[in-house]
Length: 457
Image 1 (tube, rainbow, N blue to C red):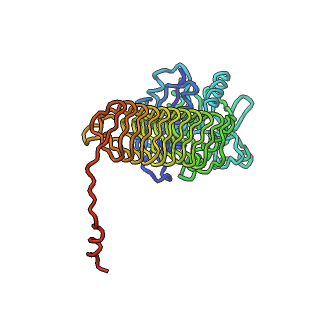
Image 2: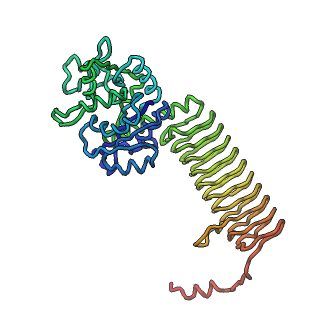
Image 3: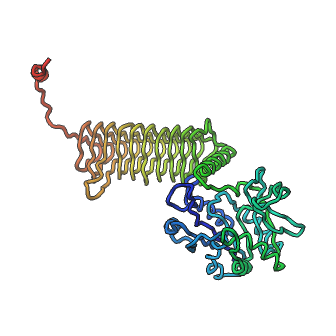
C-alpha cells in the first residue's frame, strides 16, 4: 500500500509566533491541511505527520486522524523521516511519498503522475521537481540519460550548473523497502552535522539502484513560507487562483478588492460577488445571487437569487429569493425560507423564518420557529434565555407582531395573531387573537413648566 510522510516539525522563527510553521493558514486552512488534502485526493490515506516544535499543537489539530511521530531534535530532513521508520515498517509493500508540510500547493495530479513514472521506471527514489525562471537558492537537478545523478545545492553549484532551471521541490517518492534501508545508511558528516534526505539519491545510485526525476507542470509546488511576507504572498496567490476558477465558471466580480473565497466554496453561474466579501468553509451558493459589498458567509447553503448586503451568515441555510441586509447577523443553525426579507440590524440565531416573512429592522429572534407571511415589527425581541436554560418561541403563519413586542419563551402564538405595540407576551395566544398588555397611561399636565422653573438660567 502507498503511504505518505509529511514533514511538519519546523518552527518558523521568522514568523515570530509560538506555533509550528505548517499550521499557519493559507485561505483559512493550515498549510499542513493543504498537503494532507492533496494526498487524500490522490488516493493516499495512510499518512504519518512528523512533528517537532510545539508538537502537541499538531496533535490537537489532527485530532487523531493520522499517525504522528516526534522529531525531538532538529537534525535535518533525513533525520525527520527516520522518525517515521516504525510507520514505514508496518507495511513495506508499496511506495512512500515524502512531502513538506509548509509547501501547500502540491497537487493530486503531480502526486499521481509522479507515482506512475516512479513505478514504471522501477526507481528506488524519484524526486519531484519544477522548472523556475529564477532558480537561485534551490538545489539543481543533474539529469543523465537514464535518470538523475544527484542534486547540487546553490552554494556548491558551478557556473554551468547554476544555469539549470529544474530544481528540487523537496517532495520525493521512494520504494518503501528501499527508503528504510537508505535511511539507515545516512550519516551527518557535513558542516551542519545533519542528516540530509537528498543524500539518499547518491547512496541509491552507488548501490546500483535507479533514481529519477518527475518535472511537475505546476511550478507553484515549490512555494513555501519562511516569514510573514512569504505567507502573505501564498495567500495572495491562492486567493487569485480561486477567483480565476470562479470566473471561468461564470461568476461575476465587479472588483476583487477585499474578496476572499476559500477553496472549498462552490458558487453558481451568474452570481455576483462584490468588493469586501468573504466566503469561507464549505459554503454552497446558488445562481443569480448578489453577495456584498462586505458580506461574510461561512459554512452555509445559499439558494438561487439571494441578495446579502453587508451582513454575516454562519452555519445556516438561506433558501432562494431571500433578501438580507444591510447589517444582519445570522448565527448558526438558522433556516431562512424562500422569499423572506430580513432588514437592517436584525439578529437571528438557531431559528427558522418562514416563507415570505418580513423581519424588517432592529429585531432579535433566537431559538424560534416563525411561520410564513409573518410581519415582525421594529424592536421585537424573543426572550429565549432566563439565565439558566433556553426555550423556544413558536409564531404561527400570518401573524403581525407589533413594534417593541417582547415574546417571553416558551410561548406559542397561533395563526394570524396580532400583538399590540409595546406588549410583553408571557403566555400562549390562540388563533386570530390580539395580545395587548398596556398599563394605564397618565398625563401630568404642566409638568415641564414646573420643572423648567427649577433650572437656573
